[in-house]
Length: 279
Image (cartoon, rainbow, N blue to C red):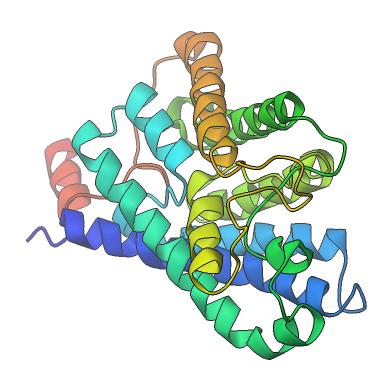
């Protein structure tokens, strides 16, 4: 009996993205409210990567664990993911990120109020990304394109059966390491959002809980910034997916396809049916 309906896939995306944001926004809150005494850039990078890994483990079986609109759109464009599911998946990802950010906001409410009672730019970075002072919009835009292109390119490499990917249970761990590496290599310009849901959901949560300038950059130099971590990662994901598809995937040897972490399992009996046909 098929149990994995679209609602189930959406639930997996909600909770997988929640786990990701709980660890990611949570570690930033700890570092910011602790004034650096309880962590630093490296601990932030590692916690985001671990959050990604754990979120994938939560959602992989049901939904494929996209957890990122840029990944969902790239999979639809190049990997046959159904376009009718794109908006529901994105909605689920944003909801998961939004709810997780509210939980972090409530958990750290006292410490945030202590160091930033007026809810200013000083703590806005707990929830959303922003360019570093002196970084222009074009540079931040390019930064997000490059980071997300790398993310999707490597995810495609890890989840393409003919590319001899790692086993499904190891894949999430490697994707988490990829996010750690991206944070350490491309975190300086604009905070490596590389995920529209990761930025928009928490940004919205912060706005409705007192951060009136949430839609701006934390430096105040870019009055309307929220659109950039949405648009640039989507473009970057399409570029990264296209590069892998047309330069790597099309040149790989033909081998039997297998279910990977990017392809949700539609029927629990599927493997048994295949085994029966091959017997």
